[in-house]
Image (cartoon, rainbow, N blue to C red):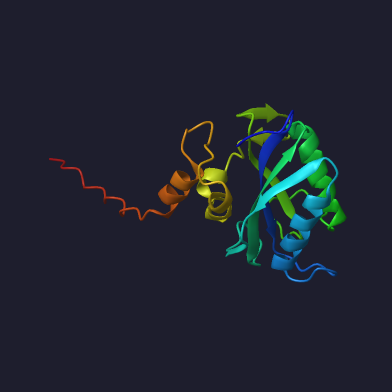
Length: 178
């Protein structure tokens, strides 16, 4: 991706599985979130993926709507994360200790043009993105050639690996004891 000036390019994952009092169903929450991201000062929306439905992880029972967006900004990763968390709060997200809870809006930095990043509270690439079809499907739709800086694989390749049928594990043979 070509960068303008000091801008950095980010791949952001979006998710929702709770109706919003103003925007409605989770897919509409994501459309509103993409619009809000495009209006955010200092952030340029480059692309937004189609919205996909997915099964929940963890204790939540509600299905998710998921999408991905590419944004450009001069912000460093921790500053962008703070802005994304501020957007989540404006949409009504309340952070409570339990992971994978139902949420009105979840915004995650998946990748960025600067390669790997690690700081307290933020790791890029997102540690679990390679194993999540609900991240890879929308991400590969808008950035199929972006590469995971750790594996070297493109988003298209990661998605294909995840979708590939796996043979059943072989059964253990009983050991021959005399």
